[in-house]
View 1 (cartoon, helix red, strand yellow):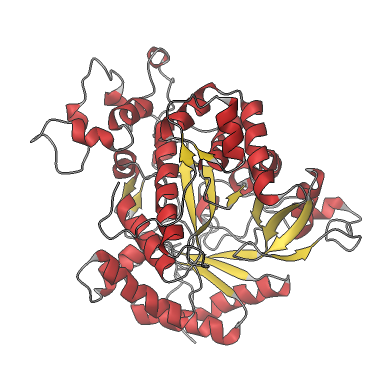
View 2 (cartoon, rainbow, N blue to C red; view 1 turned 180 degrees about the vertical axis):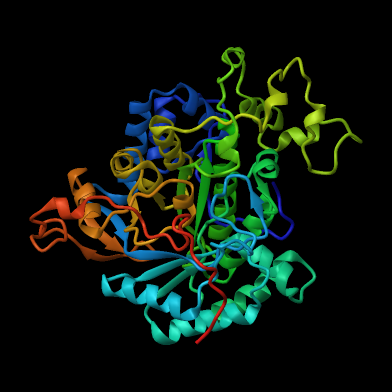
Length: 495
């Protein structure tokens, strides 16, 4: 888990007390106060053994210690997926296209600007712009895109291009540099000069190598993802981190994912202690959406009654992998360096391992809330935890505010990636404010750095002005390239 290029940690993370149980009330009280941090083993113990309501209370207490009892936030932005052409073949994705399908598209600059105008008209302050990894788009296309946006919308915050996109930029553009870090920096500096403000945490999925190699075909590994974000932090950018769970991973893999985020956050915060240096501002996790995806066609764990008495195959592999330490335990000569060898697993100790990747364990509401609450307690150095109402639905998202989340994310004018997998929740500002207020908090609009722009406490608040709530019911999101009716292919263009 070390990186030779990592900065020396100068700030002082909270102490760990490995000898204590994760259920120890004194330990958890110290975690809530920011005076202790959980070990990965303690986090796994909490996940398995702590009753959900109790876990929610601890997570809520930690959230209130950081954010107070009054405000919970949201942002008005728009998710613009500028292309769905992608050279990766992730098994969990229903969005990607090869490029020759009827519904493959790359937006023109005019189309992107039109979307931004619609956002600005409702008080939006930011675009979240991500796309497939399209080898046909040159660097100049991105530079012209960003400079054009900033020229027409100078106050707009551009939150764009996740780490997998940057890694492919390196492959597509062949920038100068001796190391991956240097190549990423070369591209990132030019995009920043053209108008890029910050990076979203897309493409995180699950960092554990055994999982990632199964579901993220053609997508960068964890080290590359984390290195890309670290470069952004060194350049002073604020970013987010994400996790997609509820598929083939073990529960310990989720904790490992959070652990890496926490370790690299320590590096970012320690690099320039006492300054507003770049770092992760938020962590958002959500369950895998299976509809229309190759991975979604994999049978559920337990469909065969014989599996019910066995350990889930993802948990078995996670136990053998042991937070990345399991690689060193495998016999020399039977594995490539730093790559986990499934063949080295003892079939008597891990009898379900042969089903790894052939079964999924979907995440439902209680599992989602448990995972989110744990992230609030474990990620002691990440300020914001987002509630994923887009995938879980408005009311589970609202309940997330009782399980450690301080932020409800964005109004959803448009979303194409999870919508392609069957999730189509869409809320306007009034409904989002109502959900927050009904949870006992005052809704507040924020910006990318989680600074509050507008507090909705009075009679002029968006939800307080509503006379007929039937006009504000959840509706489907706009999708750029829905499956029906079929659309003609949109080609690259510029104005």
